[in-house]
Length: 270
Image 1 (cartoon, helix red, strand yellow):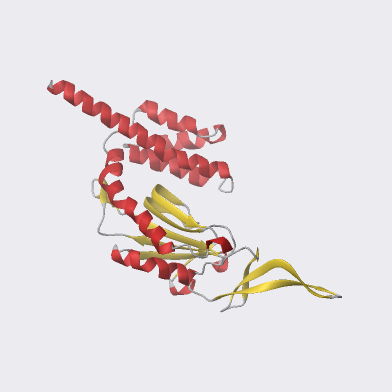
Image 2: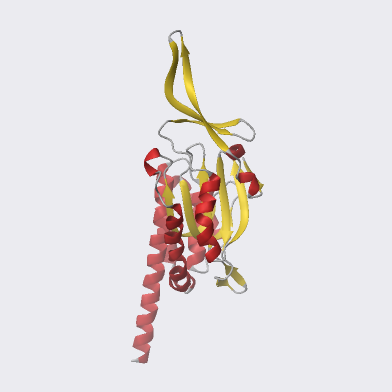
């Protein structure tokens, strides 16, 4: 279960406690440790000694400079599992793209962290139409980078990672996304997207396309992503591999359609 909260609620103190096995010959280290909310003494997880805690406070401190420089505004903080996992959603209001008449989308940056190993510390920049209460995002991910919770990553510069991800935003909003909005998707392309889905998802994706036929390749991307996010197994690695293929294919379709239109226009002028 998730809970919307204030940013302050996500910045609780964390402590680590070694797990010791009591034997007649004395205490024996087990190679495990508890990750504990120091403010409430609630145990958030039990991890191996190789697990490196990345504190929420350190993560936000490392990224605040780049976020402030881009004028990003915190729109939502959310915790999962009583604080075992956290997400923060920021929006950049100065950059926007009209996806339909009077309907604008802004780039958003979602920062994630966990104390139970369920996700890496990550920075995701996207153009999202929906961010669900369970943490799933619907839309196009512009860029993503992450840091594993391991003792071998102690010197990683998370702020530099955010800078790298943010750099992808300007070009995408000026070039890639307008390309998706420029054309109505060909029926053959819609069919190929449907055929990408596993057979047990065919009914779901067809119903989604029929209930609201995509008017642009952007709509096609969002419809396909919605089905993948809401009806497919979120625990399966194959689902995430499948999702990663959606944008490249649909972007390729949109680019081919734009190239075809340009060639037709040149022929007409010749």
